[in-house]
Length: 380
Ligand code: GLN
Image 1 (tube, rainbow, N blue to C red):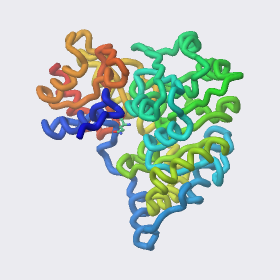
Image 2 (spheres, helix red, strand yellow):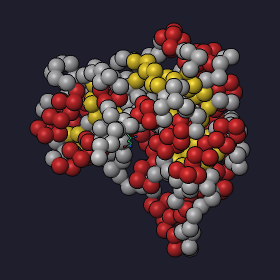
Image 3 (cartoon, rainbow, N blue to C red):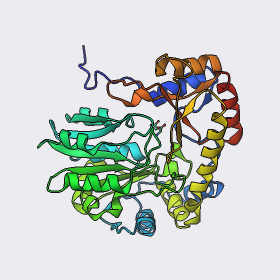
């Protein structure tokens, strides 16, 4: 039998490809975004405690109420934005599932979705899988600035959603208040929804401020916000995140969520609820990562890679036109096999493979890992 693929152009995600190569060649893995240092011992202790106390059966479908309440408090504290934990917050199995579910509950065949490329690699395939049509806006280094007139030109009666991601993976760029105002005026008097991927909300540098869509009533009323605790508490392997949306959207979100995952890991939800209750457990995160970013970028300055601006996320991108003219996928492979350092070729985040000769490095690593990696990269 022959199965006609629903995603004929999609292969294995670049994160799996590069991480596997890193293992195969024992390379330092700065490709997939995850920390190589320990998760907070207190948090691990709490999971252990709740497991031992018997909290091992299904959590409520929308997530543990205690956790949803803590999330509502955090959103109010950080963005002065009110979400009802009962009807407007759902716990998900990580950010990627939240994105999938948000798209699945609104996108119909033929609906157009505007995305900004380079984009996280799940966006376009998910839209395609649902029968939607991806309308990419290509952004270019070094600043990856959005020309909102270009976005305006893409609008059509079929435009159902605009997806944004700030701080951005892979570019490290953040959206400004002017960007948000442009977005607001663009969607005014339309039925366009917003999906705002805010997984890197706490990883923001050099005095920039995270402008959540929840700060803008005109955006909030029609937005899904997706977030991940993996990025917040150095626990990417736990796959727990959440979605915020007004009730009219969250009702539809839960109709899909209940049949996609039903509910998420119970003891971890209890543990995160306790841990999140203490704002000190996330308020120092900015500084923690700023130190890593500065450390890594200062080391990289002594190599022949050219650093691109980075104001958020845990990724530093570099351009290598002074080193070679080979494709980014080729250089990324060669860095693994010849130099023992894994990165992500940023062409993987463009639908048509646009190659600006840019590689992305993850700096959520121990100081000695970063030192060792740059030591190897200085030979390139
Ligand atoms: N968000 C992470 C990254 O960009 C990886 C997520 C994943 O591997 N699914 O590296």
